[in-house]
Structure formats: structure tokens, C-alpha cells
Image (tube, rainbow over all chains, first blue to last red; front, top):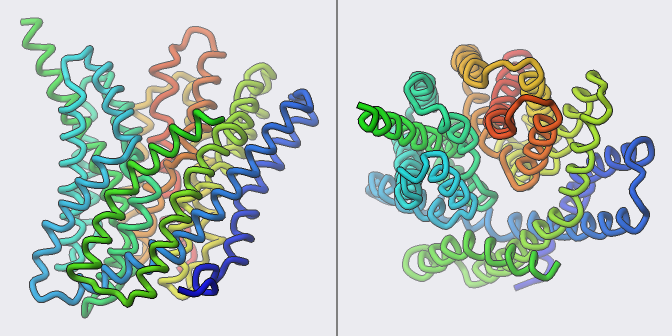
Length: 244
Length: 231
């Protein structure tokens, strides 16, 4: 293992971090000077925190750059060359389920849903619904790469279903559902699944990584919206039954 | 700070370890990458994990309090244009610092050999979010119902999708997914909650939420428009 490989492109990553964090810092300093006027000691603490965040971002991006992206691509290349492509579909289901199950933000959402339903829908139900939702959509994403299905054929019906369900879902579930889109797309899922999908589609003949490799994150974002709305629909039916 | 460190470490490890385990199992059963490459992956994982932990801790004690201080100050000023401008700027600066956004735009730039540049893409994604955050706050002020705004945005997306050049469609939808990360979500939520609690007579719950969903629509529309205009 050479250090040169691990720190390859480090300068670019460094500039990237500066470009990412400088604007928010400038905005805050302007605010501090004109409106906030917080005590110096407090500002000092904030700056220390920002420096820690910057260092972390630097390490994270560099680690992704030399570790996760090449590994994801290697896995993708391997999967793109296997004989029975259909195996990718259960693989996608498994990986989708796993990454969602372990994502902390998903657990927070499950608590929210339980509260919104006045405990008539259990946390575990929500967790399973979201994990299965994401798993199905990642599997669909794999099918999309294998059979060259355009993303629109999956996403447009998905959005139309979401539009229709809006009117039938219990109201307290709606805003939770929309916000839920982001929960399953944590930094890990994004970097890793994206690298795999790009790797597969560049290894497979007749597949363009831009057209077929991207789009997986969009599907992962759509899945929890539909899962939570379905639960909201069920919650409304239950409420009606109770009232009757 | 130590309790943050412990919580965040657990959170990051829980999210990352299963994936790392899958990769390691695949390495020994199927992949068999050259050992050097495997060690490089391993070093990368350790850097990424510790980096993510540090980032989240720094976010909690440094950057989020900045966002909250700005968000809490805004309604006090009672100046409508200032409010919207700052909400716009805050949405923009938070988005371009989002790790997922940086990774995605870098990936897109490398796959297209720089034909779709990372900088311009990040900029457009940031503008898309900023625009929709500002719009979502206007919604709270005017008491528009969330569901109408959301339905209208979805309709716009579906219609635009048919006019956008094919190679921009997956990129646009993916951009919508990555914008809801550890950086943007708390800042936007703080903005929305501070905002609706300052406006009397509107419940924080029903008004503050839904902002994230609306914000993630922004980059989809922005990139589609960019695709239509430029190519």
C-alpha cells in the first residue's frame, strides 16, 4: 500500500472543501457583523466546530475518493460481467434493504410516523414498509440497467401514484411522506450504490453509464414517499372503521 | 462535545459497517481484487468513517448553531424582502456544502469526462434548492396549502421530464435525492420552524414540515431547465 495512492488528488479535495464551507462562513460573518453581534467566546466555539467539520469533510471525501468509489466500481464491473444478469435483481433487493435498515435517519422517521398515527401504526411496521419499499426500488433500478428501461418509465408512474395518493392519504401523514424522501439517501448509500450502478452500466455492453447508471438515488428517494403514503392511506381506513 | 462524539460515532458505524462487511465478504468470495487495491479500499473506509464522524460533530457544534442563529434572527427583523433573500442564500450555501452533493457532482463530472462540470452542477443544484426554500417560506406567510404546492411541483416535473434531453433526466432526479443530507435538512428545518413559530396563529408542526420535500424538488426542476436551455 502506498501513501501516494491514498493521498492521490488530495489537493483537489482540499480546494473542494474550502469551496464548500467558505460561503456559509461568509454569510454568517456578514450576519454577525450587521445583526447578530454574538459574544466573541461564542464565535470562537463556532469557528472551532466549523474547522472540525472541515477536517471531517476532507477526510470523508478523500476516503470516498480512494476507497468507496474504486471498490464500488470494482464490484460493479464484476457484476456487469456475470453470466446471469437476473441475479442482480435479488442483489439489489438485498443491498437496498440492508442500507435502509441501518440508516439512522430512517429510525427517526419511524418514530414520527408512529406519533402521527396516534400509535395505531407501529414503528416496526413503518421500518419494514420503508425497507421493503427501498429494496423493491433498488431491485427495479437493477432491472432498469439490465433491460435498459428508461428512468422515466419508472419515475413518472411513481410520481403520478404519489400525486393520486396525496388526496387519499391521512393528512398528518402527508408532510411526513414528502420529507421522507430524503431519509434513505444518506451519504453512504449515495456514494456506494451510485458507484456500483455506474460500474455495472459501464461494464455491460450497450449500456451508457450516464443514461443507465444514474437514476438509482432518485428511485431510493421515491420509495419511502410511497411507503409512508400507503401507511397513511391505511391509517385513514382504520380511522373510518372506528368511526362507523 | 464528548457525548456528541459518542452518539455520532455509533450512528456512522451503524450505517457504514454492514456495507463494509458486504464488500469484505464479496472481496474474499467473488471479487478477489489485488491485495494492494483492497488495502487502499480499507484505508479509504477508515478515512471516510472517521471523516463522517468529525463532520457530524463539527456540524453540530459549529455550523448548525450558525444556521439557527440566522434563522432565529430573521423573523425579528420583520422585513419581508430581507427574509426571502436570506432564506434563499442560506438554502444555497447549505446545499453546496452537502457531502452527498459534492460526491454526486464529482461522479457525474468524471463519468461525462467533464462535459457536465461539477462546479456548474453544484451551482444549479444550490440555486434550485434556494428558490424552493424561499418559495416554501412564502407559502407559510401566505397560508397556501402544502399539498397544492407539492402537487403543482410534481406536475411541473412530469411535464418537464418529456422535454429534457435524455442524458439529463437521471442526473436531475438523482440531484433531487442527494440534497437532503446532514447539512441541509437541519438548517432548512430550523429556518422553517423558527419562521412559522414567529408568525402568530400558524402551528409549527403543519407549517414547518414538508419543507424538505419541497426543497428536494428544486434541483430536479433546475437541472431539467438547465438541460433544456443548454443542450
